[in-house]
Amino acid sequence: MNKIQSYRLPRARAAQGQMQLPGSKSISNRALLLAAMAQGRTELHGVLESDDTEVMLDSLQRLGVSARRLESSVYEVIGGWDTLNPQADLFLRNAGTAMRSLTAALAWADGNYRLSGIERMHERPIGDLVTALQAGGAHIEYLGASGYPPLQIKPATIEATHVFQVKGNVSSQFLTALLMAAPLVAQKTGRAVEIEVIGRLISQPYIAITLAMMADFGVEVHHEGWQHFVVPAQACYRSPGRYHVEGDASSASYFLALGAIGGGPIQINGVGSASVQGDVQFAQVIEAMGAQVKFEPQAMVVQGVEVAQGERLRAFDLSFDLIPDAAMTAAALAMYADGPCVLRDIGSWRVKETDRIHAMETELKRLGAHAESGPDWLRVEPVPTDGWRDAEIFTYDDHRIAMCFSLAAFAPVQVDILDPDCVGKTFPHYFSVFEQLVRT
Image 1 (cartoon, rainbow, N blue to C red):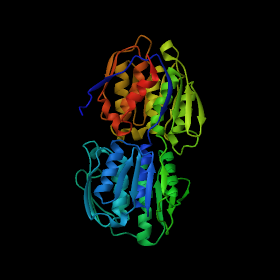
Image 2 (cartoon, helix red, strand yellow; image 1 turned 90 degrees about the horizontal axis):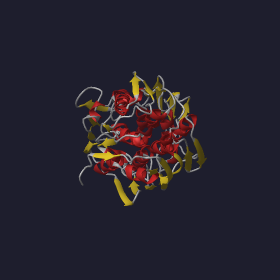
Image 3 (spheres, rainbow, N blue to C red; image 1 turned 90 degrees about the vertical axis):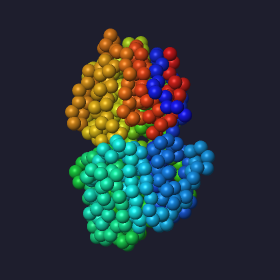
Image 4 (cartoon, rainbow, N blue to C red; image 1 turned 30 degrees about the vertical axis):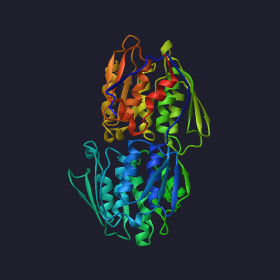
């Protein structure tokens, strides 16, 4: 299949309808790995079918785990972490969830494993996680620059009484990786595993997802103030039999935003008030900007202003420490605000699929917005009515950049999204779903 080089956004005047979210990437990849480490057979329903989950599935299969697709979004995984292949070479592309979680889980397997990815993956830091694992007896070597993939993992010499320590201010995926792998250490040592977070913990809602899912697979983790975690000595993953993956709340942010600027109503099916994902809190952001959101247990309905008719959203100055992925959508909405908008505590953007602070600032300027940034903040002034410019939006091989700038469909200019296929990382059919909702 030929890769699409660019996608011209429709000239949208309104947006309404309903859509079904794909499965959550964060939950899908956690569920696949937990099922692989659990005793018994697990049938996973609602699994996201995307580049990142394909990476995890391929890696599990290379490791010797029985993981197969039964039908669309339904997979069978038979646990078998104690019978892994003794060696494997895993290519993880740019899937951060897979790289971090597999590094920790394989650190306590009795084999030799090489983990690598694309060039950008080799620029994404993993040193804090590796240092924490090495201090507990893991044998991990850097095959390139110190602190970054690719990695070589060899059988560990586990320190039975060690307390794992990890920094919390770079990526919550480091703590998630340690937590998910901790029962493997408990089984080998017969002792409880303690994990301490050093400094401020960012993206706390993602840790809440991890703990809830570990409990679903039979392991209850005790914690104090999100800084000290204890995994019991008798911890052992057991299959829940059947597990349902809820819709992706990060992906919901684009459709919440679409309803906020396109009038609506738009009904988003797959996440709602019963969601375990922190990114549903993005609904509060667009409510603060002047939209209305009605919650149901597994759905949200949004109505907002009509920017095509000259209406504006309310400006904001907010911390996005808890929802950094959804925050990117707020940066795009700032183009339609009634004053300058400030996004704070977004330093983790710097080490994602690309330097997202730089990317968002650069692409917003292409469209006519004035933007400036610092180490962990971004300030955006809305585009004046006569200030819009035709633009080609560079996506930096980053799915979220492409989806955020689909909101430029409401700009009175011609906008082309370059490399739109990069949305395949989490939402392969995003633009077709988008087209069904906008009215030109």
